[in-house]
Image 1 (cartoon, rainbow over the protein chains, first blue to last red):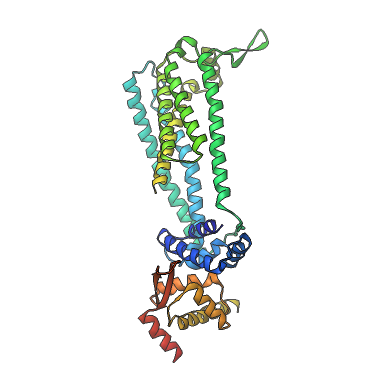
Image 2: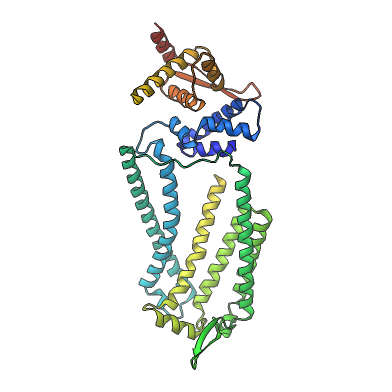
Length: 322
Length: 89
């Protein structure tokens, strides 16, 4: 409870003040508790100190573009917007660049050419992401600078003084377990597809009768991809095992996730190079259903998933070391 | 009127804190001293005030790690002593 409270208070303060304030607050709370460390007493002491944001406001000085009153909200909003917007921008930019440069319509690409083109598209997409990040930062900062000058007040949401770190840890462990279970289910599906590439998962209408009689892949073409699919499955199982066993983030898990994403990337690249992989029936449906070559856009769109995951894992690695 | 009272209380509290810092105090001891002199002050108000006074150069702080629990002691700086003398004259 005390740790959660102090963490919340300092989250509203500039980085340079956080360490000192958190040490001081911890000592103050211990002194105020007067050796009675029961939950009830601690809650009363924390309530005496007040809402974390109110306490942080008293600590801060009004200087700079955004003062302490708005800094917490500014930081939260900026992080939220960046986390949502940047991956979307990356995906859209990736697909747009792939489509506009007509790479997706080039048949029978050589491996080296494909990889070179992919690197080209990734660099341009990252450029779009960087540009978007600067724009978002400027807009959000501008809005909060105006709010600071106009002294608009935010409604303070209630703080749960009874919140304990253990609850947060349990939720985090459960999420790792859930992810592990979902990955196992997905892996089972993948294994099923490996041994039954033409299993009828798609329906068609023949003579006015709807029947589930179309598979996703062409068996002969899919056979060449089996080793890569098995590699993806193997790395997925390793990631799952680490998640279920450790139930926390770690360098080992991050490394396994990156290897898994790299294997998925390799699989998708080889899939792009494999002609006649997808059932022609599905390609016809997709092409008739849209004005674009959507059947060729989808593999490129799928490429963004492992690429984004790799960047995400590198970010987690950076946060882990911090 | 409310704003005037807030400013008045803030100034009075600053004077009271400066007067008690003639001898080094840590935050909680200062809190108890002020309350014993019938000067009610909220704990959430005192610590931020001490930090502001330190940033203004009126007091200095030093960590004392000699005891089982490390404590941050505040005392008047030379500027703070001068100001305290001027206030009490």
